Image (cartoon, rainbow, N blue to C red; front, side, top):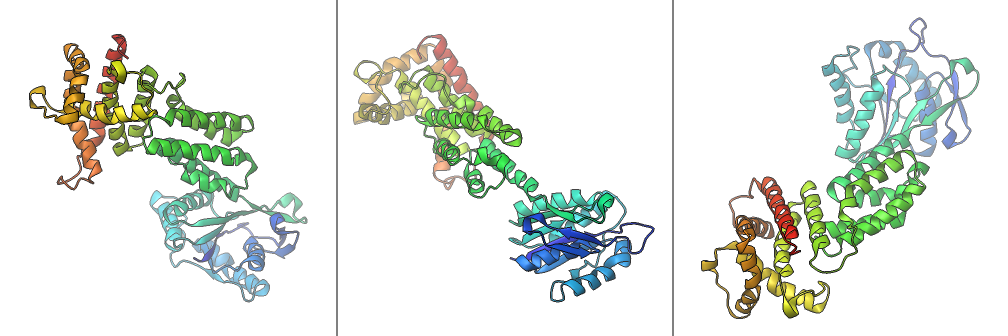
Length: 439
């Protein structure tokens, strides 16, 4: 992993040769040492060499800027940094024609010379106005595609009105870190993945983003996303509610970009936090929360988890119709867990094949008989037929995930469309059960 310094050699004043005046620069973050030079690249490298030597100095230039200034820059570097890096100039110079194809050439020149894991310092001081766009795009691409670390994004702030005063070298790196935070929040909102956010929280140094880096907030996000990915349907609502409480606390001290990102998370997950206290039973709030979870899993393309939740939703419909000593047991109680293992599985099996093809034995036969009054009730109102129309396919797809599709020639290509279709059917069935007052 090399340390790379990238800069652009400009032309400066067109009517003068050289095109740049001698000026005094200092880098405030690195102390008050002042360096008087013609080229800001020399000042930057002087500071970098004292801190951590650069392995490669990549200098992009046009034909004109190379002819006008390259030899002068090389001479100045030799005077100030006799053992420091000399600029490497790509054989193919940067074209001045602003055609899109040429813009891509600049971009690709930069990409091909930087390797995975390299540590990058970029100087934006000189060059055509398109250069910052190209450099910025390259930074974003390299960080994500090659794992490159951006150490500095520098600008030599020369003020011609104060040419006799020292001019600061400004590090704009933090404005690129915001891209990392945006990506991390997007991962949380779009993929239910809090890992990137947790990594950034450990290293952030930007005061504006500190509300996002609160350890208790990150912990709540992690618990919430773990719950979603593990399809822990009985605990998701509570975990989401806890995380959203942390979001509201963080918003009180947040401004600007941090508040925007917190709002994104709040808006994304609010639907999973039930407005009704969890009863722990198979009631309407429970089923509505399950639908919210399934919708989120499908949106995040977590299809295995979504199909698991839909299969469990069907089993829960069976549980909702139990009567007598089996009814109204809390899901988390020992009886509740034991009854679910028995009756939910039998009910799902009842929905997969026509009644005349059922084959239940021993305990399952007894449990099937316990479920029959509820089954007949659903049958008489058409709900059973609706469930039977897709439950077998739903379970087959879920089993395909379970066994890594080894029993199939390939994974079903319609998983996403089927998942959304089954979801709409379940939503419609719940509405019917609600209208009849059965749930």
